[in-house]
Length: 444
Image 1 (spheres, helix red, strand yellow):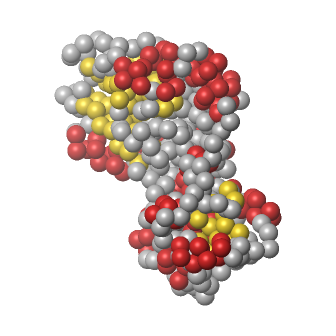
Image 2 (cartoon, rainbow, N blue to C red; image 1 turned 135 degrees about the vertical axis):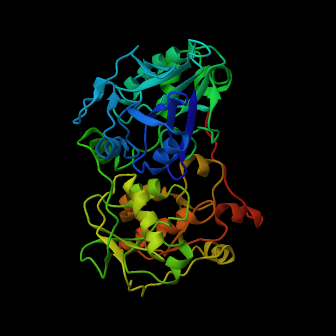
Image 3 (cartoon, rainbow, N blue to C red; image 1 turned 180 degrees about the vertical axis):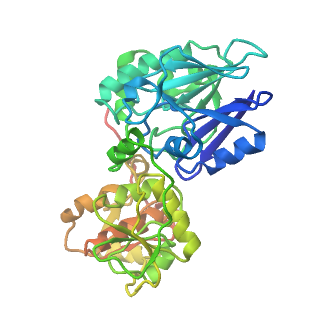
């Protein structure tokens, strides 16, 4: 058996090439939009890709099944509950896909979505018993899927509980390869480790050690994150007609009415940027996810990049989260606006004088572990929606190390609210200087 895991480091999404090297045939499970690494791996291994298997209709990234169908004539299999608007082969519970001597058995595991399936993989040259299982968005390393993206959260969690029980019926030694690793929005506590085993998760996964279905439902619904605003768009793309390869954005002088996404570093944006532009550095972590949270979905989008290569990289990562048609990238940006960052020494003085409105833009679990006294909490990804609640004082944004503070300040700046970010140090640096933080303590 041939088995390869390919991970999109920006989104934390995993796809798999599974095949019989001797027979020269294989399948792809959950391909990314940018299928080139998949095709390169298949060519390197001498495999002919015979089929795409989708665990479910993805909500956080655009699938590459359309490209493989359009460009290579590869058929797609998915559970019929997905109700796709493209030609597909229905993949029911218990169905077996044979790839040479490799047998892939479909295990229907709804919860994350009604159509969700896992795939138990056996190498029949060794045994009919499964060697590994591809769990998609059901069981992760150290976590389980969020249940609220397709159905009501508690109903989804109940379905997931019973689906995970099916997976836990597999032998302890079966290897688990999930559809996501750390960095994805689909699980809050998942590990960055690429794989695990059924036995290890049975013993040490916090959600799997709970005593009852009710406890599981309460825990999994209580930890679900904020629903990304582009979920419906991504689901519609993945359920709808085939999505072809995106066209690279052209150079443009300007685009009236467009949102300018500045993908340069936070420092470059501060030194000079287009008025009203939003800054999400493509060099940072989770670029596509962060951009998906702060970009409007109903306006043209143009990029401000340091060079052509950076613009094309940003366009590629934006396409993966559903921003397929960009208006272009700026040939000569009018970078006339500046933002003066706040260093920690200045922040200490400003807070002593009660001269600023300090906005902590981290996530709730981060803030609960310690926040600067007097700061207000508004996560960067919803700050634009709540900006009307800001007072009359100058605004300073802060996060753990500086990257999200820069995004937040630019989001406010695009709304005409002057905001200065703490770029160097953040809350971690505040503590390192000997300053106090307040830990949130729950009652009970």
